[in-house]
Image (cartoon, rainbow, N blue to C red; front, side):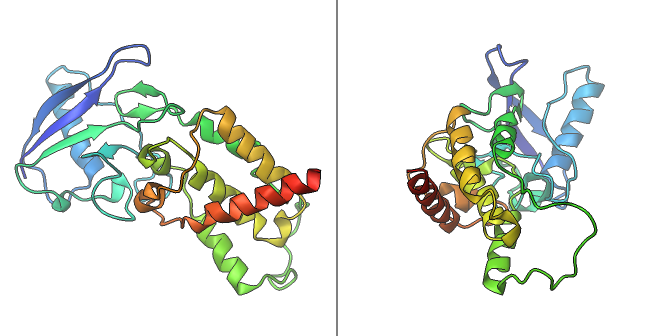
Length: 248
């Protein structure tokens, strides 16, 4: 495959970025999008040019590091797929592909396609934990959990914190991420002691980090590589109202 890439290049956070065009030739349709960028970077290095900076780690759709906008869509055209698991066969030979970093006020660009997602850490630190004592693992049946709750908690826990929901949201909101982190603990018995303080603290951290408000546009769940459902935001809002009411 031969492709034309228009890639966002930005030296550092204070520099002004721009789109730079590259021609990439002889790419296997079975290569992943990141492998294609690897090939391009190898050629740039051999030519004495600066390689394109982009985040990556596991390359197995698990870590959530590989976020980028591809033709205006977070993680690209394939649904429920991370960038590292997106293969070039989803594109046409000769196609022009625009590649940009996440666009959100709370995710400042560090360099090229790399953004600082440290704002997610502040949300987790505000309540993404439980006070259940550690020690020897209990028997699996020691704490009964209804299957419907267990399934819902597992669904929420699949969130990998990639930030696609924020990048796709017209308001730059991280409510889907926050709802997933609040929900997967709040659905389990072990998460009940901090249930009220968790939802209040994490929502306050969300707003303080500079994320926008949620208007239920739905773009977040559309691009989420793990298919986190929008209903979790409704659960978060319900928990928040109850927690605030208890405070009086």
